[in-house]
Image 1 (cartoon, rainbow, N blue to C red):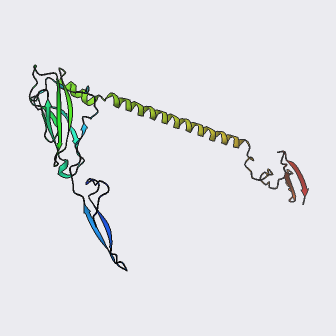
Image 2 (cartoon, rainbow, N blue to C red; image 1 turned 90 degrees about the horizontal axis):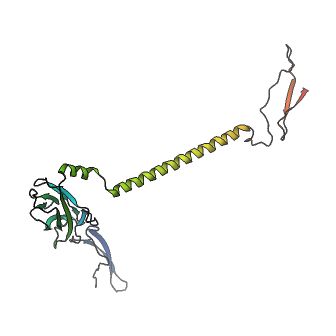
Image 3 (tube, helix red, strand yellow; image 1 turned 30 degrees about the horizontal axis):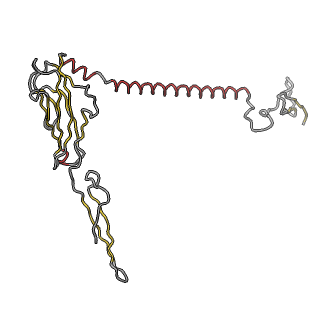
Length: 262
């Protein structure tokens, strides 16, 4: 009947358009046919809820954000970071304070996700606050996620808390750094040991080769370099036809001299 069906789900973020060619033919003899190209455009739909990057969804409740009792109004406490996998205006994110131990103490940036103090902290305020933040996208219908924050109020000065938060790595980071340092030391040690062994073998091989200069000769007879005419008689007269030849055996390095006249 010419109906076209989709066999797999389509996602606007993955595939926004594609083409297909349809072959149409009749039942006559001979059959007549034609081809038609169909362009398919995928429309966007809000099908992804916001994902929370910070604070981590699997973070332990004991990992609370700390603020000093001396902080003033509009002081930054922490920030929520989220993203949406949708495209366009559907990915716009808004943050709302859904629940709080004291809703008059903290505010949430509508589009920034920043948690700030709404007023100065007084002695009567609780030392532990739990905030439930709603993160909602701009789709229709809108999809949302929630995250829970724990904020502790301490008597430590704000400067000290800032230094601790910025300069001290977590135990997980320290463990990872130590592991990579150990691996690096082991790799360097192994490379140095292999280098020493290879250099030692090369030097040993050269030393053995230097002990026997005829070891690498390809000829079965150990023939020394050719000798020129030798002046056998020390005097003013040197017979021009007087020469010597050297013969070597394969089992001995001793030379037997044979003298003859030409």
